[in-house]
Image 1: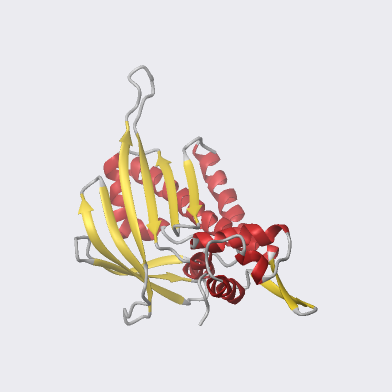
Image 2 (image 1 turned 90 degrees about the vertical axis):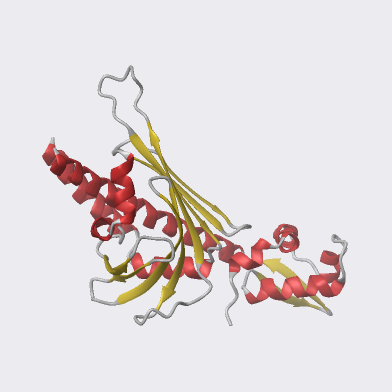
Length: 175
Length: 106
């Protein structure tokens, strides 16, 4: 589909998950996609699940309180409490599952997001910048990973393949 | 309470035990001989690994032999693979959203 970088590693010994992905868009747009709820809700939940953000206050000490909603309407709530923000460079939050009344299930994991612009080469005639995002999740547990898989991806591969088909169809129509 | 498998394999001694018994079933005494630690300490590690179902015990005569649950180890990798898929899907969806926004701006 494209040659944008996607790197995923899990260090079981240190309970750290690292995800790096390159996006074909400028830094400020990618930053918005991660930090504005209207955009976040459009992509955060793997289809056919939906992301429903109830509260989002993107500032240090603020939080995002959202639910992953299954096609049957079942909700699984998560709190992300922002602990550090360096605009268009980095932000961190503490991630924890919660009930619908915002009572967290502690401990959670620490998520660290780093954004960097990859400049287009001057000799590239159709040159345009891409943006690299690194997400590092510390103190992840297999139990919580399992939960995330359960809440957002029950049918697994079939869903991805269906989505991919749909995406490819849209892309070919655009050409 | 259910134990966290990441915790189980986060300890260097437990990882070493896993490597040892992956090759052959061993008694706690034989395992302990490989470490500069007490038999009690090895027993504690074996108990944690057993609770996580990463190792299984088998009684042979008067001795208990410990061996690795290969399937359980594979299961961990399967979970990780599914987790990777979530991120892949999520980011493929973000690609689509970014491209839509870019078009709207033009």
